[in-house]
Image (cartoon, rainbow, N blue to C red):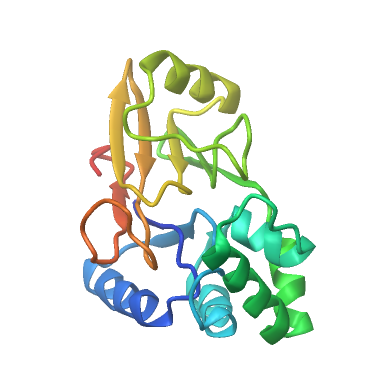
Length: 196
């Protein structure tokens, strides 16, 4: 099975639509989002609508959570404004959708246990797991999740690490990349070949 992972759309409808166009060409079987559908940019309702229409599952990110709760204490001024804008403009139905998001998705595909979250299994909404994280930490997180493949978002930086048979992925960001490449990012994982 070919599974596409996306993350951190952040209300950027233009980048999101472009990524979906690319994924159609890639003939993927499923698409999952690692959270942060909203925040920063100006199209939260449009992005929520596309997630509902095109994405097979999404977890809750910290901006989704902040939009629900109004708690923006840890955000910079741009993050606060993005959350406040979403809270002012999205519908009650959109809020209900954000509230329905789980903090992780667990899949069993081709004898692989795949755990999808925004942060980490230890703190599913807020913890940042960067590409240079220690091997020991990553293995501990995989054990906590009881997973062969751990897929996380939040950092906006793509990652593919393989340690002792475990696979750690981050698709980067659709709507606000932070890896020095301004292009929207996504990742496709083949569960048979185990290639990303």
